[in-house]
Amino acid sequence: MTLQIAPTDGETAWFTEARLGLFIHWGLYALPARQEWVRNVEKVSNEDYEKYFKHFDPDLYDPGLWADAAVNAGMKYFVVTTKHHEGFCLWDSQLTDYKATNTPYGKDLLRPMVDAFRGRGLKTGFYHSLLDWHHPDYTVDDFHPMRDNPAAREANAQKDLARYVEYLHGQTRELLTEFGHVDILWYDFSYEGKGKEQWQSEKLIRMIRELQPHIILNDRLGIDQDVKTPEQFQPREWVKVNGQPVVWEACQTLSGAWGYHRDEESWKSVEQLLHMLVDGVSKGGNLLLNVGPTGRGEFDRRALDCLRGMGDWMKRHSRAIYGCTQAPEGYKTPQDCRYTYNPKTRRLYLHLFTWPYRHIHLDGMADVVEYAQLLNDASEVKLLRSIPEAAYGSMSEEREASTLTLELPVKKPDVTVPVIEIFLK
Ligand code: GLC
Image (cartoon, rainbow, N blue to C red; front, side, top):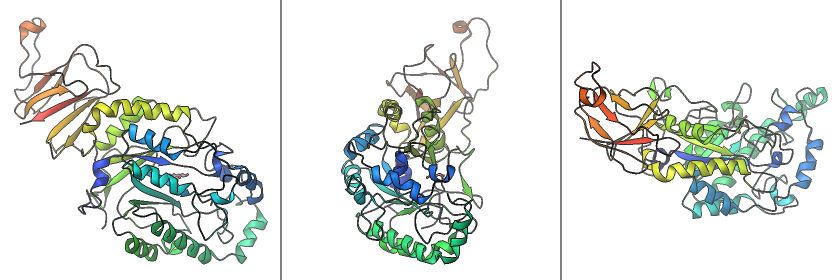
């Protein structure tokens, strides 16, 4: 399988149906609580980072609670950091001692998570860092915490990156053979000097496809695969490769960090998060929304509030998201709105980012709409094919005969993003 608009393989079509997933960034960095790049930002050596390994004990960890929060938010899959750049492994890898089972917590963190999420019907995704600031054969480069340390740079001469890459391939094999059916493999990331040649990406991809033929593989091995992954921004239009629209998924944080960052305060509002979700689906894309759990193993209150708010909305509006995509060509989106469209039910969804007073004009739609309602309560939205002068004073606007006008209540319905469900003829 290579990049395409929607996977045609029956085993992967679920991905573009699902539209919303949960990203989880969890590792030792939850303890410093200054985000997952803390080692890089503060240039922390292995020795100085060791204290977090020695004190890692997420005693309140209950992945069932995490999975419940994801399900209630309307999420259909999850992607968890099996290992982030720091090198620490959540599972009981046989290839390293740097893993959860050797911390005070003493247990595998990944397996119960997979069981809990899978048990609730979510698809399983593994994030895996190509970088590894802890592995002895991972050479010091400009992203490395020891980049400014001349002795560490010199020690590169004794390192053998190929040995690290063997470890990377071996750990990938573990992840793809010991946890049953894995739906997504999400690598991160490639750069100058550490890319597809160094990672031996082609060989790695052959192994991945052999072990889990149905897996959805992202684009960060330096070779485009099944999904493009714009990060921390919403693309202007359907993401294209060589001019062709492809499967894509935006990953976004709830606040300004991926890993738990106690003092970071730029949390997005539920309205912003929903706008991002809708905006993505209106351009044919998914949203992977990230939570960074705490060192005690919980989603913090701010994250839970975001997820709860999204769930409130999803409960009544998910059919404007699941299985939906960009509206057919020629449907002109009214100002401050987004369209999503379900090609199977042929219903069109008009998401209102601001509440108008009190008409919405749909150009060119006079002959194609059969019925319309507010999605939150199935209350009728009147279709006006002309605006009678008597009803609105003596003034009437010039309008095209092909324009359809929707008449809305004066008051915005009590939902974060109102949606009008439009039944096409
Ligand atoms: C960036 C961040 C990394 C995070 C990833 C998720 O690469 O640096 O920490 O895991 O985005 O896409």
